[in-house]
Length: 483
Ligand code: HEC
Image 1 (cartoon, rainbow, N blue to C red):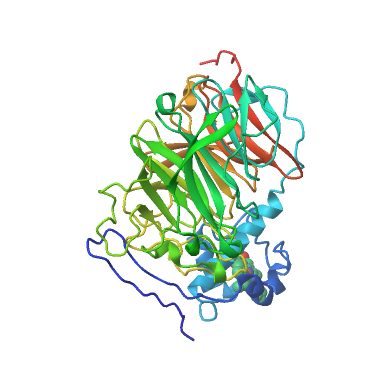
Image 2: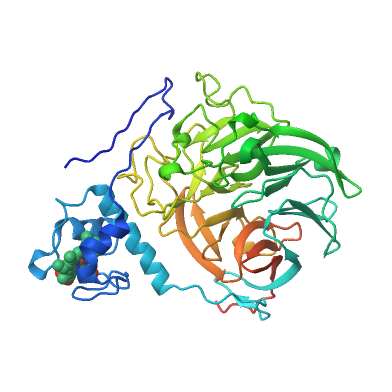
C-alpha cells in the first residue's frame, strides 16, 4: 500500500518561503502499532521481555534517530528482531521513535514531588553559585511580568488580573479596568510589556484572549496607561474582526517583544482539529505566525509579505505552532522563539525575516492521539530548529541574561519548561548550541524569566494545586576557584 501523503504546494513569487500546503494524516496510531507489533517482544511498558528494553538506557545498535530507524526498518533477523520496512511507513517509524523517547523519559526521569519551600542553602552550578529568594507568593498562574523604571513590577495572572508589586509587596487589589478575558484552558491574560519610551509616554501593553461571539476567542493586543490603580487611555494595537475568532481555547502564543520602533509578537495555530488546522502555512491567515508592527499597531511598509497578494500584512515569519517564548538577544539584535510541538517536537528557533519554520510540514513530534503529523523532519526551504526537544519539555519563556551579577552567564540563553519544571542554561555560538546546563527542576512550571535591573534573574512559577510565585536567583559570593 502506498503512502497517502498529499502536499499541495503553491510557491509564491519572490520565493522566500510562501508555501501553502496541507498534509494529510501520514499513518496509523503509533501507540496502538506499538502494542500490536512490538509489545509482544519488548514488553507493554517497553521495559523488555523476550527482547531488550527500549527505554534507552543503553542501545546496542545506537540510539540516535538514524540508528533507531535502521534497527526498526532493517531488523536483526539473525537475533530475532524482524525487519519492518515493508509494513511500517517512514512516518510510522518516526512516530515509534518519538514514542520510545517519550516513554523512556517518563520512566527514567519521573518528576520528583513538588518542593514546597524553596531550597534555602546556596545552589552550586557550573559557572555561578546563587540562592533563591521569594519576591512574592500567592499569584494565580503568573504568565508574565515586567519591570517599570520606577522599581515597580507588573505581573499578569492568567485568570485576567494585572497585579502590581511595589516595594517588594504585592498590592492586594489588581489594576481596575483592564479588559475582560476568556479564561479557559490556555486562554486568559497573557503578556505584559512596557514601551521602550515608557518613562516619557507611559504605555503598557497587554496580550489577552478577547471574548468573541458564541464562545469564540482570539489574541488581542492593547496598550493603555496606569493611573491611581486603574487602566486608562486604552488603544488597540492588534485585533481581528470578532467574526474571525475561532472556537478554541488553545495555541495562542502571545509574547510581546520590542525592538526600536517595532513590536514583535507570536500567534499560535489557534486550534487542532484533526491534529492541525493547516493555517500556519496559509499566508492569508495570521495564525501560526510571528508578526511585526509599529508600536501603535501600524504595519511597516517593508514587511516581507507586504506585496504578496492576500497575505496578512503583519506577518514576519511563517510556520510556527504555539510560540510560548519570544525574545531579542540584546547583544546581537537577533529574534528567538520557542514553541510547543504536539507530542515531541518542541523547538528553539532563530527567527529570520520571511523564513518558514515548517509546522506542520516538518516536525519531530507526533499527534496527541499517537498518529504521525508528517513523515519528514527536514525539507528544503524550511528552517530547522536550533534545539528540538523530543519528548516535549513544554518549553516556555526564554531570556538572554544581560545583567552584571552573574558575569559568566552574560549573553547566554535561559529556557523555562512547564511540564518538566526546569530552568536550562544554553550557550550558543551563532545558531549552534555548544553547551547546556539544567540549573534546577521541580520548583514549579516556569512561565516567565527576566533579567532584573539589579542583575538578579527573576523567574515566575505556576504551581499545580498551589499558588504561584515570583522568585529571584541572587548571586552568592563565591570561594576563590583554585586555578
Ligand atoms: C519477534 C520479537 C520482536 C518484535 C516483534 C520486535 N522486536 Fe525489536 N528486537 C527484538 C530483539 C530480539 C532485539 C535484539 C536484537 C539484537 O540485539 O541484535 C530487538 C532490537 C530492537 C531494537 C534495537 C535495540 C538496541 O539496543 O539497539 C529496536 C530499536 C527495536 N528492536 C525496536 C522494535 C520496534 C519499534 C518494534 C515494533 C515495530 C520491534 N522492535 C518489534 C525482537 C523483536
